[in-house]
Amino acid sequence: MFQAKYPGIDVEFFRSGTGKVLARVETESRAASLGGDLAWLADPTTFNGMIAQNLLLSYEPPEWKHITLAKNPQGYFVAGRVLVGCLLTNPKAGGAAVKSFADLANPAMKGKICIASPLISGSTNIIDGALWKDPRFGWKNFEKLKKNEVLVLNDVPDAARAVASGERAAGISLSLYKYQLEFANSPMQVVLPAEGAIPIASPLGIFAKAPHPNAAKLFYRFLLSPVAQTVLSEAGIYPARTDVPAPNGLPDFA
Image: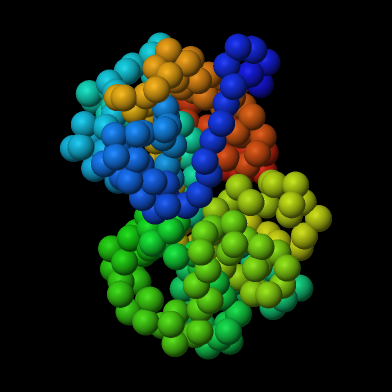
């Protein structure tokens, strides 16, 4: 859609887990050959590190007034989407009874659950951190999951695939995967946990030494526009803008 609007600009992207994207940014920065113009990561805490290294450009376009989340006061980043850490279950594989994070530690779920690695998945890093800090769970929760033979996979799409295929009955992942074409006909279900789902404001920022600074600003503004934010909502991702509705079938963000 962006290329149709700006036919003179080609868009190339590298997509991976937050950990791998950060590793690439750090390697290229040290070599003074940063190849990217923008960064869009699931874990909002990573942007503070990039600010400390003077990697980001301060830029506040008009679209900012419609966004209230992960809004850096100096203009270095703003939420471009809101991911939701939740449970994915497969009733046909034995996941019908899973309604809460606590249910994953039930002995009946032994060998039937999965989660992504927080070393690779930025969203899982936030989810794990939220559970670790929650007095209802803490570190003991992860010890229980280990005892329950939790399958640790690379990234959140891998957890979704394991649940959708029936390899695992339930897992911790993101709500958006049920909306993707790959899983449209699977029995996988989105379950917002009884304890509460975990919203993750996923920021977007422009590199200070972006090779294509003008194109980067155009793309940045486009991603924050109502048109692009509506595309996200239709794909099961909560828009960052306050004037774009929530994904169909999910509650309003408030």
